[in-house]
Length: 71
Image (cartoon, rainbow, N blue to C red; front, top):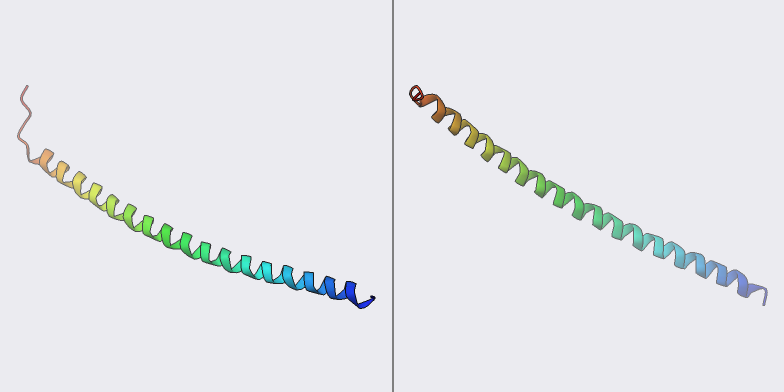
């Protein structure tokens, strides 16, 4: 009877350790997924910023090539 509580405690500690290891692995996967999503969003935002900049440059060029505005 004296051995049973020790074995139960050890068994519970092993289960807790395994659960923590599994949770840690899941968190690592979530971090990787989040990093991938952030990198993708950054790429898209940089692309859009480039398009806006090109658009602004073209508008500025067109405005500069106009003749004097009619009064």
